[in-house]
Amino acid sequence: MNKGPLISIVICCHNRGTDVSECVGVLIPQIGGAAEVILVDSASDPNVQAKLAKLTILYPSVQLKRVNKPGLALARNCGVHSAAGEWVVFLDDDVVPFPDWWEKLLAAVASAPPGQAVIGGGIHPRWPDGMSGERLSERWKMFLSLAESDKPGSVTEGYAVNGANYAIRRGVLLDIGGFSERFGRIGASLVSGDESEVTQRVLDAGLHAGFDPAFKVYHKISPERLKLSWILRRTFWEGVGDMRIFRGRDQPLPSHLRPLKLIASLPVLLILSIVQFHNHDWKIRLAMCLGACVGRLTTTGTGASANRQRFADSRPSQ
Image (cartoon, rainbow, N blue to C red):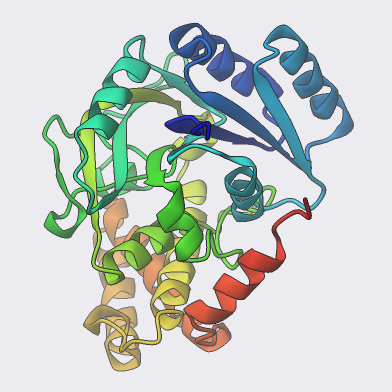
């Protein structure tokens, strides 16, 4: 019986035809035919849809799928259902792999012990022309989907893994029910956390999730993401997402998300945001706290079993 490929690469795209063309154009020469590449069109506008179709003519090895309802988690699940690889590697549509990305990814996957289900790769910024991130705090940079450490480590040790460059064993992802569609970007929405929730479920299952800096990508940072208005919206929705993740685990909330802690933190963070007005970290923390409060009021604990059923129901008929 023929075995499937070791690796399936899934790239989900919503209205970023130029960016994803650069990503695919750098990727394909590295891998040749050694992996399957699945490009999922997440309800892009007709002009971008046409551009993606032309991209698959230029690169015939790229499989094009489309979901007509926007949503990153929905698109990622489409990619998972279409994949045949032992590992599924997710790349954002606005990343550019380093020249040795494929070589280093293969080495990371080959050396992964059986209990390791997730490997997050390095993510380095590509700043807009004439701009840089020098004035940004480390807290701000956390929300730009960057992973710049030069040392490997475990998620349980505090190392970050991000969906912009994210490898996971396909069998594990299928077993835990894929990506929850309560998370993930939908169009211009800044709701995030689908890969964070998957990583948490991997850890809950007793498996390992780690970071490997060797296989790296550049992540394009748009000028919009350097504005205070963007980071406050982004971190508000991060707070909402955090609450959704932990309420969906059917387990007690961690101390920082318990109602009394949130209520007590709000006035303190508000005062510090005013007193130390030029220190935007306090505003970021306040926005996250507000988001967690809203998430607490609007989120119910649906449980992992319900998510598995939705994921199974979303599988295309053969």
